[in-house]
Amino acid sequence: MARVALKVDCDTFLGTRDGIPRLLDILGIEPAVIHLNEGHPALAHHAISAEFDTTKPIKFEGTVQKVDWMNPHIYVNIEDKNEIVEIDAKNALVSKRYSIAPCDGPSGLTFDLKKVHLYSVCSNKMMIVSDPATGKVLATPATGAGTDGVAFDDGYAFSANGGDSNITMVGETSPGKFEVVGTIATTRGARTIAADQKAHKLYLPAQEFGPPAEGKDGKKGKNPASIPDSFGILVVGR
View 1 (cartoon, rainbow, N blue to C red):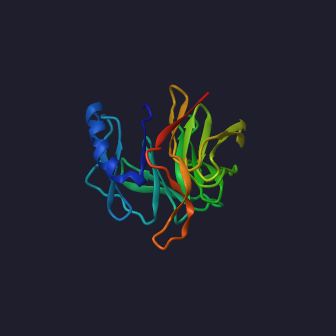
View 2: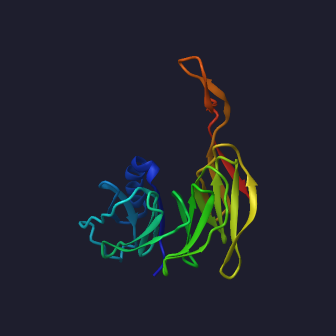
View 3: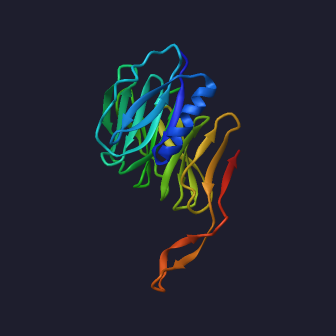
């Protein structure tokens, strides 16, 4: 059976709820529904020949940050518990959950479809490489500050570090050994990321920042203010 992958960003729930069904309709794929985090549904998709019971909600506790579908399982970063939950979509149950310590506050999640490795990025400046089959952490390479998203392309994982204005590139340098192999300059605040795995390009939403804005009390704020009409997509290629 061919593997099917779908990434769902829980920060954009409304767009996911409205956009994914339309996409699946265009592709002729029937959606399955799972219930995550206080009853809000997240959508996943599957091959038409597969059979899922869409009437059974799957419930578990925790702050959901990222959902990745790797047929026949769904993987979820649980931010407040520093765990990954594995969902068996066909049987509508949580089949496994495992700790990804020493990660603190996992946000972005992506995967290597061929080797079936998961990559989580964490608020304490590290990337966790884990094996969902064994529930074990394989490596903890360092990343930068202010990361939120991670993408995978052509054997490498890319952590978007908005606080440090760069991308950390992690690769498997020898069997079972994962290390930082490069750092790519970006821009301040570029912390979410997507990969085009055919063109081998990375895309990061970004905007320009100026001096801190002045509040109603006349005092300057602590954080730089965004410059109006400066939003764009930063494209990183090879």
